[in-house]
Image (cartoon, rainbow, N blue to C red; front, side):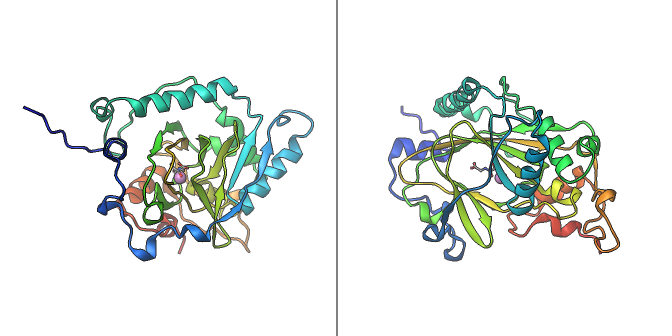
Length: 300
Ligand code: OGA
Ligand code: NI
């Protein structure tokens, strides 16, 4: 007797049944569709970290500060992660998504507090970047990491299957990242878009670079000097896409508040003080609300 397995993962639906339509539960209402004709092809700053520890440090810190204020996003090259490590990571992700469905489902969970770990030799020396961002705000280089308790890195593997009707749905709808900063490795297939001056900007992949974006917690600590910017991932008809974000997170009991050094009479605290744990819970409990969770933590 044939066994009928329920296909839980969209990727299998696409690859095995060769569907020519998006499943109806993935179709977005007309007003929420990606509107792909209106996307601008521009770029985000590309910063060369080669001399971060050399005589050009001040200049690089200045570029990082400018990128954080103006874009909330930048790319880095010469980040000291070897090309071979990057291609190994991508291969591990690809191999995982090629596993039979039953194997992958062993790792399936929709519980955001659960930590499923996939271990690799990946180490981008995030602390050094965190330090550079802290310094670019005019704070001591250890200020941000000193506020965070035992912070953690969470890595995700995103798999976006080819989609027969990419204008009806998303890989990931518009969102901000709730953590401190995110470091994203993407393969050679475009898909990431960043909101800038009211327009969606497509960030085309540059080989061997990482994309870094400011999350909600840095926006709070910087008292709105740096922005946690809306971004989304769109899909396309032809190619699957893999991206690997690493989310750099404070510990749940870390107290998050605007850095006192950045406050003046003219620029009082925009946010009240909270713990990262409180924020995390609010973020996941607000459903798919599109407005930023930050609004719930404004100082009155
Ligand atoms: C994310 C994210 C973008 C991408 O996982 O938070 O924004 O291109 N990913 O996969
Ligand atoms: Ni994101």
